[in-house]
Length: 207
Image (cartoon, rainbow, N blue to C red; front, side, top):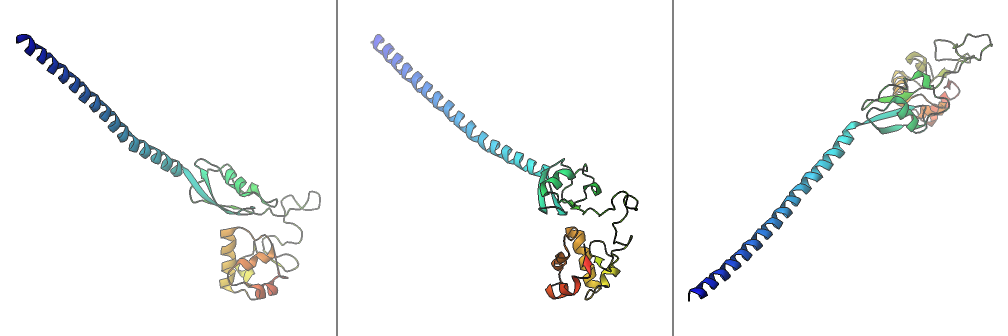
C-alpha cells in the first residue's frame, strides 16, 4: 500500500512539474511579445522626431530678380547665397558681383539678383565703371528722354504720362519685391497698368 501511495505521489509531482514548466514558458513568451510591442511606438516616435529635426534644419528662401526660375526654395541649413542662386538659374545679364555669394542663408530671406549695368568698353574715352553711353549719370533717364523703370526715382516715374504718385510707388514696390523689369512690357505686371496705359508709355520707358 505504501508503494502505491509513493508511486502516486511521484506521478502527481511529475504532472505538477510539467504544468509549472508550461506556465513558465508561456509567461516568458508573453513577456517577449509585450516588450516588442512597447518598443515599436518608441521607434516610430524616434523616426518622427528625426524627420521633424531634419525639417527644422532646412531654410526656405525667396529668390527673385535676374534668374530663370524665381520662387521659394528649400535648402539645408548652412547653405550659401550661391547655392540658392544656382538652383534658380542665373540669367546671362545677372550681376552676381553685386551679391555676397558666400553669405549664409537664413530662413525667410529674400535674395534679389540684380541686372548687370552696361559699362563702357575699355579705351572708348570713359573710365572703367562709367555709365554706358546714352544714360545720364545719377538719373533714371537716358539722353533720348526715356525713363529707366529699373532705376528711376519716384519723381522721374511721375513725369511719365498717366503715372501719378500712387502708380509710381507701386512700380518701385514691384521692382523691390520681384527684382528688376526684364523688358519694358513687364511694367504691365504692376497693378493699374494695362495695355492702354502701356501704349502711352512704351516709347518713353526703357530698362
